[in-house]
Amino acid sequence: MIAAAAECFVEKGYAETTMKDIAARAGVSAPTVYAQGAKAELLLAAVERSLVGDAGPEAVRERDRFRRLLEERDKKEKLRLLREIALDRPPMSGEIMRSFREAAPGDPEIAGAWEEYRRRRYAGMRVLVESFAHLLRPGLTVERAADVFWAVFDEQTTEALLGRGWAPVEYVDWMVDAMDRLLLR
Image 1 (cartoon, rainbow, N blue to C red):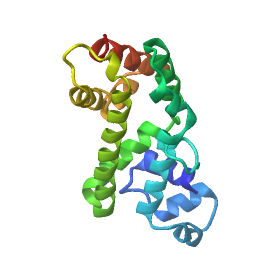
Image 2 (image 1 turned 120 degrees about the vertical axis):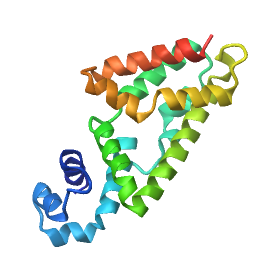
Image 3 (image 1 turned 30 degrees about the vertical axis):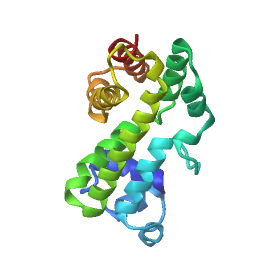
Image 4 (image 1 turned 45 degrees about the horizontal axis):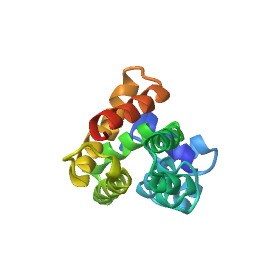
C-alpha cells in the first residue's frame, strides 16, 4: 500500500493523488486504503520508507554500518563507508522527497512534518560531520562544516544533478569527493 501511494505521489504529485488512485495502483478497494490512514499519513509513511530503505524500526543512525562510519578514524575508510551508505539510498527517495517538500505548503500536518524532517536531517548531518572533526580543515569548526554539508548536499542539489542525467553512482562519487575537498584536510 505504501509503495503504491509513493508511486502515485511521484507520478501525480500529492495534491492531485486521490485515495482512489492509490487503491487502483495497490489493487485494493478505496475503503482498504482509508483503513491504512489519511493521505498525509500515507505520504509520511512513504517518506519514512524512502529514508531508511525498508520497514525496519531502527533509525539509520542506529544501524551497524552507520555506527561503523561514526566510529571509524581513518579518512579513506570513513569516506568509503559514507559512499557505501549513500549508494544504498532507495531508488524513489529523491522523487518522494520532492513530493513531500511540494506538499508542505498546502497541508499543515505535512508542513509540520517537513520542518521536523529538516531539523532531524540537520541533526543527523551534524552527527556525521562531528565524526570527521579530527579530519576537518584547519580553522573549520564542526558547526560551519555541518552547515556547509547540509546546504551543499540538500535534496534539491541531488534532484538537480540526477535530473541532469547523472547516474546515482556519479552523484554519490561527486558528493564524497566534494566533501573531501570542501571540508577535510
